[in-house]
Structure formats: C-alpha cells, structure tokens
Image 1 (cartoon, rainbow, N blue to C red):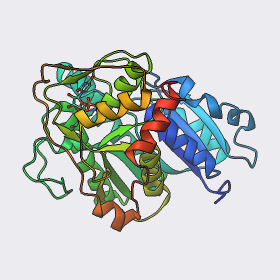
Image 2: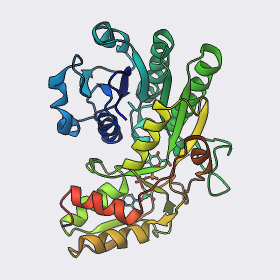
Image 3: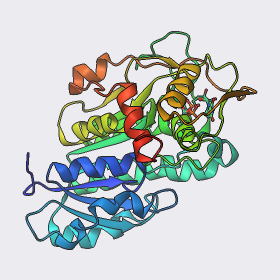
Image 4: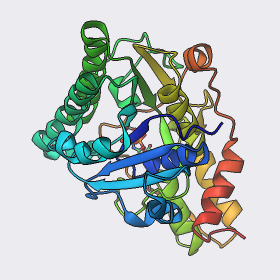
Amino acid sequence: MTSTSAGIVVVTGGAGFIGSHVVERLIGLGRRVVVIDDFRTGKRANLAPWADRARFGFAGTEPALEVLTVDVAEGIFAALAPVTARFGPVERVIHLAAQVSVVASVENPLVDVHVNYRGTVQVLEYARAAGVRKVAFASSSAVYGDVDELPVREATPCQPLSPYGIDKYASEKMLHYYSAVHGVPTTALRFFNVYGPRQDPSSPYSGVISIFADRGRDGRDLTIFGDGEQTRDFVYVGDVARAVVDAALGDAGDRAVLNVGTSREITINELATTIAGLCGRGSRIVHAPARSGEIVRSVAAVDRAREVLGFTAATSLTDGLRETLRSVGAMA
Ligand code: UD2
C-alpha cells in the first residue's frame, strides 16, 4: 500500500523504543510521518535509519519524516501549525508519548499526570479541532492491577496500583469521552510486556529482557528477583507496532480497548535460561530478593484484538529473542 496522497500521520513519542518501530512501519507503508518527541527518553539515534527521509521534505511523493521537538502536554497546536499549513491536515494520530516508568510515577505523580494524562487530553483536543480520523493510544496492562482470573480480559475490573496505571486508565476514559461526545474515533491498546531491539537497558527498572540481553552479551550474571516463578506475557515490538498502525490507519475499533499480548505465559526462570543459552557466554543465573508490590502472574486474553483488528502476535518468543540479542551483539 502506498498512501503518499493520504494525510499526515502524527506519532507522539516517535523517537522512543516502540515509537521508532511504529515510524519504521509507517514509512514502509509509504506514509508521511510527523514525530513529536521531547527527547526526555526518546533518542535521535532511534530514528537514524530514516533520517534521509527528512531530505525529501513533505513536498515530494516519497514517504517522509519530520521531527518536532516539543512536550506533547504543552505545545502541539503551535508546533504542528506550520507543518499542516504547508502540507495539509493531520489525518491520524498515534499517541505513544509517555513517562514510561511505573516507579517514577510513584515517586513523582505530578509529572506522571502532566505527561501521561494532560498529554493525552492535549492530543485529543488537537484531534477534535483538526477533525482527525483516528487516535490510537498506548495504554498498558498496568491499568488492571492485581486480578483474580487469568488470562486477563478487557472486561476485567481495573484496579490500577500506581499513578502510572491510573493516568493510563483515566486517559482511556478520556478517549471514550472524545469519541462519544465529540465524534473523534479512538482506540486504546493495552500493551503487555513489550520487548525488542532499541529497548533501553540502562535503568534497574528497564524491561527485563533488555537487561538480560545486555548482561548476557558480556557473560555477566542474570539476576532474578524472587523465586523466578512469576510470569509475564512478552510481546515483540514488531508485533506491537503492527497492532498500533492497524488500529490507527483503519477505521475499525472505534471506542475499543484491546489487549496487545500473545496469550503465552512464561516464567522469569524460563526466560533467563533461554537467554543465557542463546547468548552462550557463560552467564550464571542468580537470585535476589523479590521486588515488593509486584504482580505474580500476567497473561493477556487476545481474542478481542483478533476480532476487532484481525491482530495476532506472530513472532515466537525464540524468534523475538534472537532478533533482540542480535541487535545488541549478544548473538551471532
Ligand atoms: C511492566 C512494565 C511496567 C508496567 C507493568 C504493569 C516494563 C519494562 N515494565 O513491569 O511499566 O506497565 O508491567 O504490570 O514493561 N526481573 C528480574 N530481574 C531483572 C529485572 C526484572 O527478575 O533484572 C523480573 C521482575 O521482578 C518481574 C519480571 O522480571 O517479575 C518483569 O519485570 P519488568 O520490569 O520487565 O516488567 P513488569 O511486568 O514488572
């Protein structure tokens, strides 16, 4: 599909880990893309493979990329005005910009409210004013909190346990409101544990796979918190990008809330053994005390995303891990 005649797709948080995969997919589909990122956690290097697209500008017929450095909760109207004045309206918005750390949200809830809640309302206000045809939003499995029944279904009552989960949940409600009252079509995607190339391993609270890949490459110990029998549903970033782009570019799924996971549950013990084996550099597996307040098991029911978007996560954990490990030089 080449859609250069179609309108602009805005990706907030487009320089982040998931955002850069979304940009890659959109450029591959021939779309003209505007990234909005404040580069607090996003990185220019994540977009480097498509930097040459900036040369074409928006006047050509090629897929193109424009990057605007702005806080999504503050200035998107002003930032987008010159771009839309020259190249036409924004047709679709993918809203990924976020303060991404649950732990940071506990320490500083006001920052979380600013970025993760106010930021969403700003995006929706823009979408309302500009007549945007779809807003797709990155929500999180953190909206559920502790649940009794697995796999987790979208209808499960939400009891978020952190400002991060609360702001994501409130954002979902705001999406629903803008659709119902202002006629802005919206879809919220609840990501489970996303992993893959370009995930940053540098914080102790980074995704476990990025940390294990980083350590496995150098033959360092892999530290498991607790007995390692806790489970997660790990979904490959390429699959997540496909779900997001399908939700944004299609008209299906207005007002839907959809889990994005694999429905496969894996223990952290199995994960550590697999990664140490694939790296083959002698990493030992060691245990440290469990993290407090952590959920024990997590796995998504995925029927709704299949019914609404036709989406199924296609990448096996082994294939996804191989891609991830190769990307950091942890595997040949
Ligand atoms: C994920 C999200 C978080 C929030 C939450 C909602 C990530 C990175 N974090 O937290 O933002 O949405 O889900 O439920 O996606 N672990 C180790 N060793 C390590 C690092 C982690 O054993 O070096 C364990 C950790 O204790 C946990 C599991 O691995 O049991 C996954 O940890 P995580 O931080 O990748 O993700 P999670 O699910 O705690």
